[in-house]
Image 1 (spheres, rainbow, N blue to C red):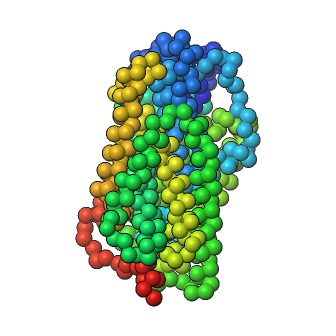
Image 2: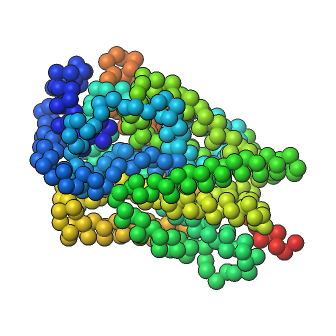
Image 3: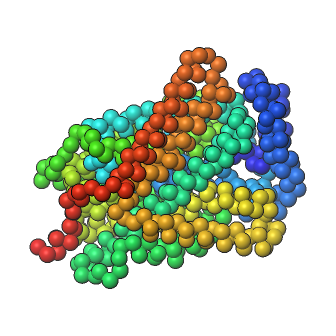
Length: 508
């Protein structure tokens, strides 16, 4: 099996040798060998057994590059089952460099691109749920905790030279590996469902703009089905470099949208003042802000790959600190400014607050929708590979046409199931669904797993163990509390708030 965060195990051993493993890793391997030897050994055996097949199929599916589009990046490098599909074991020793070559500046840009996506558009509505003061403080605290957790994971990687899920397998057994993969799959499917709802609302907004709100024959949720015409062929693409150019344009579309949000919200505040009912703290719904904040910051799957690709990895903590600061400033500014400008009328997707008659508004909505559609294949790929490996094992579609066709069918079924789930959730429940995904899938990946891994692999002092335990307990408590509040808000009938009628502009 391919080691996603450092190459194949066979390649790694041939380069560095077993005698160059850290003492900590050797100690952990010794203590856990009786429980995990079959797991690690089985993976190594599969890797060596497939090496002869590498030459003919090494390029059937490339790794996913980190992108600005969507928080799906959180898991893009958590699993790379492309090696199982293509028989790739990492290539020859000479073809893969030991040391990375990207600069600290480029690493910072990669991290920023990984964090900033469509999750930022949900923050203004989340600010209305938490209150402007509480939300600003919470975003800063979440960023600090994420920063600390990311560094813990990097330390664990220096001890356990495996990928994210296999760290859990070595340290705690197969059940932990399954737990990590399940969180990855749930988070990616959740992202795809949220973005399909996002696209449907934007498409409906564009139609209403061009028809001046006179076309109502298609309900908003049915627009979820339209992107499937494009998405079904795209999810079958396994060579992700084919999507590199569309992904670059998608990145530019998102940047353009964020800049326009800054401009419009500031302009609205200057000329019209603050929106109605601005609260500093909302005691009833503040938990929804916490789940959405974690949803927005999810990017842990890129921490280790970017660290190892750096020419000077010792600079990574400083790069991560600067990146998290920049991202937090962007998140906070968009959330606070848009909430201050629109008040209680702020929509789940803040683009819907922009003037319906503005040509720039339609441009932003169309470009953002295109960006999301182009990013869905990247977001769904990790989940697809997890299911493919669970169903087909190490059987390669490159050698068996029937296996390849079945894998393609699985991907089509998966994207269609996401569309059905999105259809059932609907636009009115989007903010609650985003908070749900952040609570159930993202919090374990961000807080709980790094703390558990560091506790067993690296924590030697009582103080370090206490910190890890506190971080884990914090993650569990936050997950349970936010999940409870989210479910309560989902099923408990409340008095609806004021509706924001965009079409009133055409009636004036």
